[in-house]
Length: 327
Ligand code: TYM
Image (cartoon, rainbow, N blue to C red; front, side, top):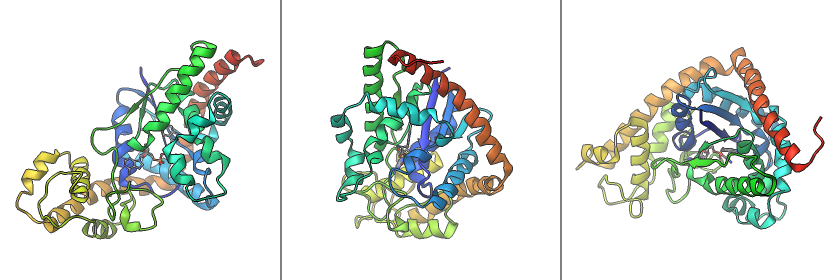
């Protein structure tokens, strides 16, 4: 059975970009593949975080995994720091990766821009991500398009390691959706929707109230043309809203263009609010049931055990190949 691994950082409220770009795929993949879904808390401290916020958001992400439909009996849900092999393999991969490779990472360039005290961990972040993926003999990594470069680096590291030490790692592939892989900010469709943008109306989170969703959608930046049609270059705002509508409703973009032909942006946005809210309502109901239950802790304990068994066996293989004395 093919293996799947993916992760989400507990750095803020999960938004519909995370959901449509990555997490919705997790639910589909668990039906046919052996899936590991991680909350990558070690990654989240590469930039300064409030400890209370990391703690709460870690439990939020685990609860949301379950609330969107990830079944802990089918998939392994766990927290990265509960499996020490991630940090250990991360170190070994740092020693098999070059400064030049990490310097080229666009996410590093963006996040370090303008700061003269950049944490070392922000720079080595992709080697920890490579460790996450390679520890599980992963074939497929479902992610949004912003992670493509990190997965290409993971492949390069795996291939190089295999060439030098003999076949050790499975070389993984990114799975990036045709549509929804890059949901844009609602207030500025030239930027990616992000957890950390200052304007809360730039995003819709999975835990937003119906009123918050309405406000964000109704205020979303569009254009003055007045026609509802998909044209990323000239109509990035409407194109982004069409993608969101299509992803939540299951209707294709061309079906939506037909449905709203001759209608104004106001009516389109009003319907979009309803479509989003009805999906979020289901997720939020399940989230509320589970968030403060003992079930979450049980899921994490079992998840950590299952993850650790696989991860430790890969780590041992790596150490043997590299010449460490393994007892
Ligand atoms: P993170 O926490 O930033 O985002 C989680 C997932 O959401 C996707 N995503 C988006 N998709 C579409 N539109 C957007 N606006 C948008 N914003 C975010 C991301 O691509 C991601 O799939 N480095 C990763 C976490 C990670 C990881 C891993 C992922 C650590 N180790 C191993 C896969 C495998 C990150 O920061 O995701």
